[in-house]
Length: 102
Image (cartoon, rainbow, N blue to C red; front, top):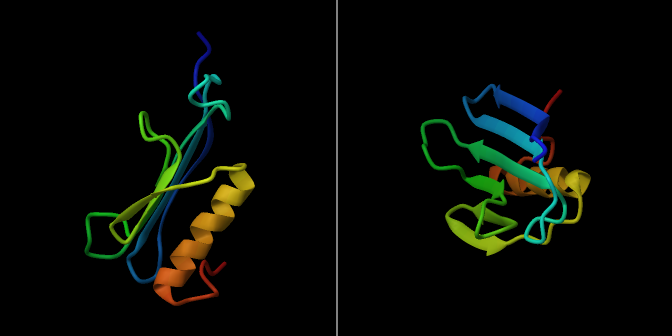
């Protein structure tokens, strides 16, 4: 069996103390996971434990997202779209169209 390969791992604490953690693994493709990816993208507000935005694809739920406590299916297309959608949701709940700042 092939091993998982880390594609992206980044954890940043912004100027306000919020945490952004991005983890993407390449894994063997299966009928349940034809994309061959496992991921967890999280935005946690300063002082909170639960993510305000979380995209993940653990078994048995598959691709889904949690936005301020509401869980819904997510139509995964590719990693680029995943990152764009995650960023758009974080911007929306922060009310900040310039996030993240360089």
